Length: 540
Image (cartoon, rainbow, N blue to C red; front, side):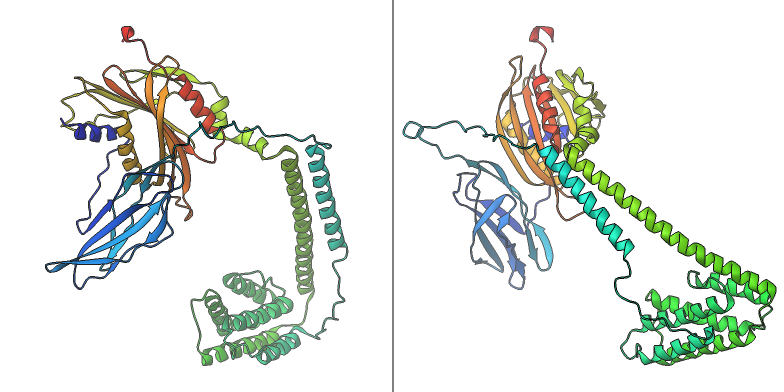
């Protein structure tokens, strides 16, 4: 087995990914290692025929890299085909390992993705013999004449007092401007007739406001029915209104025909359809609906008998319902004010205690940090490690390819949490049947490809040597990446740390991934790193 197959097999510590190559698009860079601020060139070459249309990407940044210059496209003819060559000058002003992300190239309307390539940016050496170097001074603290807590308390009390004062003034003097005297109508039919006349004078139909026209038209009809027959028409649905009218007609023994109910219901249904933009009546249909409403109101008014004792009782009951509605509205105002006061108290609590109090008591990672940790040995060759929770064994039976089974003796994976969640830690080990030479600094390239297959972008990595407390030497890879967020266009940034070791003819790997914004996760990572150890060779 070659080393290339062996490195491919190590990808199975995370997952198996398949990467395709675009035959019509080639990607290359003129250097894989530059100094800070130096320029390197990215070349995209598309092989097309003479009639093809090609669109190359443009932008000020490609991932974590800045675009210094976008050169004009060169065209080279090769037989019946053309090579379109697009070059970009890129750079980065911070040291580390960066990835030129896959870029979209449109060929004849079909999207193609360029290959992602790694570039290493190194520091410029500084001559410390001529220029003396000094440690960074600590943060200077100034003496405070007044505790910030008391300032927050005073501000919170002032805010609550101001809110209470303005709320009192608002409800106390709600009548700021004198209201015009309401128009008194002699009867519900007179009110409805005048309102219909005023509706036509607004010329809503001429302005194209059909929805507003039907809304006012049905409100006039509902108001008349509510005041004349005493049924709750305004807050009822169309079906509820028709049913309430039928009961009132039977109770009052009104002589309304089925046709009257059908005409009224037809207009109300049309208004409902117009309201939800499911219908747009023609001009003559609107005129017919208006006539139906006017005719229905007149027919209802003529059929209303003289008030009897039981009708008067029903009217009084209806009026009592209206009074209860007003009382309910007042209760809602009081409840709303109480809720506002509670919100003000909560805001004051947050001001006094600070958001750190909430984070300290309700953060899932803080619970992990403060909880009971577990120290155990995982895998073969074994890794002794301390974690917030016991790591669970993962099924790896189908993860060993046939061409690797000849040299792989054992492979095991243990983990807690889900990758790219609140916190994920994973221990993976591989032991071999024969002696194998593994270069730890090559392992992260395969890991980065796996993350890119999971839609990760802007992967930044730095590598350095790492030693455990018992003297075991390894490699530490750490950095950040951005994963897609299904709830928004902005991605979620994650930090990671990976520890690689070669012990007892095997490879051990400890991986930790967590959101960048979590302030407790780095403390968990440090405690886990400091706990890693291996058994003495005589014990294995």
